[in-house]
Image 1 (cartoon, rainbow, N blue to C red):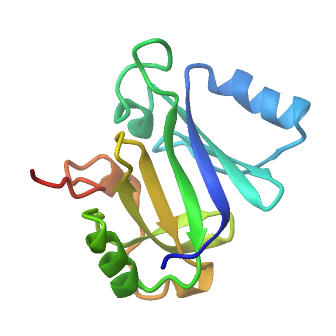
Image 2: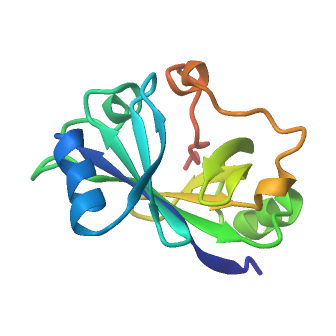
Length: 159
């Protein structure tokens, strides 16, 4: 059984990044923790979690399709912090339910760099399962180059 501890972060696709930063910072009291302008990512601290803002015209945002609205999705993915992060056990559990996941990579989350894997729920929503920051040793980090490549983050199941 996979044991979810908490939501690590969520990623919102946004049309006006500066207005969204101002809202979360000035209205809700979140602070900007990290910016990766080369891939279009701003991470705001929300208690023990993060809210990531991804402009739809940036490298990450373009991967999500049209801008948020009637025909486009606003949420890129959400992340569940799991413990322990045992890749083999996670893959076995997912496979038992007919779910495939993409490759494990080190990604930045609320606790720092740590291993994570992406999968899709039955309606196509992307879910990231993330392990602890200290478990990231020896795992390749995701960079702007890997984000903009054609390599899928999620394995698609074949019927």
